[in-house]
Length: 360
Image 1: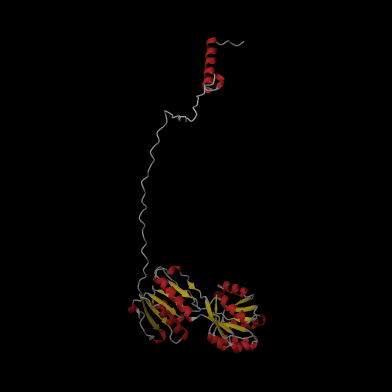
Image 2: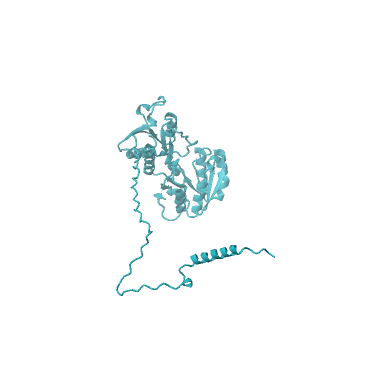
């Protein structure tokens, strides 16, 4: 049997329990009669009950206005004055026209332009000839001008154009910017013009060196855009190019004669054009001389367009924005010229325009 707890402890527990219930339920009608209601006089408004312990309302916090830091305005980029030497071969009519367009585009204040006709220079001129001009920019028109610019204007920014095959790309440096303007319109324009002249063009032959073949992605895409296929072969010499063409000619609808000087020579080009005439093959050539020699069509760079792009590049470099330019600025239009006699001999029907402009 368990030990009985003392009566004093039991009474204390009961008192504590009763007290707790009382406090937790105070105000309930279960523990006493409800208070008498306060009589309301009609038309009277009861006074609000105000707690004697209400906390005072704190004053609103007014923050001090924070002044924005003064805006630092970047000073505008002011292009420095520039002296430009335009190098070209005066015996080339197209180069003379481009030089005129470049010169006409650099007439704003701050430009000083010197035109240097390489055909009139003495071959014994010293290597530092022209430095008395304090040239800050060079525009080189044509391959000879580019060679001279690279040799005599080391460290000076160069923009060149009318160079079909620059060979090893000119290397720039931290102190020199070298940019170019494309010598030919995009192949998309060239092939589109060719296809408009010869709608049956489905297989295009091309023979180049391995070096030239590395950049043919655009050519493949341009051929596909007109529904044609590019049949490309690699050669190592001009005589091998002629041999490959003899075997390839019966399998193609036309030949794209690309400007790859490593596997072409004047003599071989002449033989290829003669063979193409015998086999009724149209040839897309890269200059007017080859068009007159027996090519069907050529798409040339408009001189005014080229000159304008050269001016844009020079202005960008002068304004210290040369690094934003692509290594080669593409053309967006071309001048199409057709050998009407060859077109007629190939039986191309319909009215044939001998010249028009094509744009992207």
